[in-house]
Length: 208
Image (cartoon, rainbow, N blue to C red; front, side, top):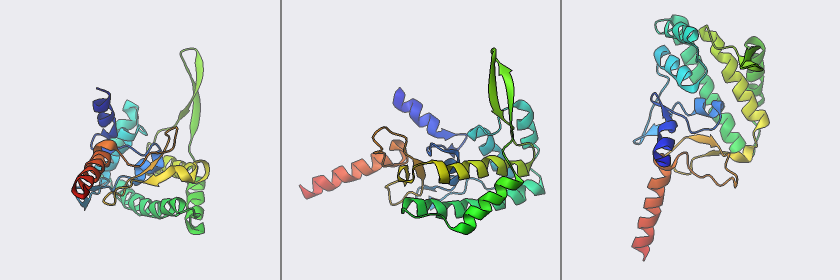
């Protein structure tokens, strides 16, 4: 039962969530499936679904607003910009994984995004406690706030040695290893781990 539950949480509405960090889950919106690159953020409707699946849009009101982006030119333009940014993020993550520092130009781009689209927060009362909340995106350009904030946090707060690409050569998924021993090797046991273990076992049999 635990294995089935884990498999279900890896996929939400057709999107993969194995990165353990919002910025990496965003990066993983173009995985390789069945040997072919698969673009998950193909249009504004897909972006709306990813925002809900990721938890960035939760309230009924904001969900309705996001659904209104489906035929919006502004949202479609944003999708193209997000995809381009995602690939620059990929280059930065690869540098981190190689014990290097991301390019200054990319860091300057993030700083500009943070300045133009700061993450807005608020406090409210819930069950006799004061809680901190994050303002959800209401317009397409508001999506930059959580994406830029998560990217900045990934690059500045996460131990680079814990940011890794799946060991499968056919996989391009990256993850933040939060395991106690720091020994995670695959994006997912269901996606790559079992397949690689079977392949290794078959190689040992052939050698024997």
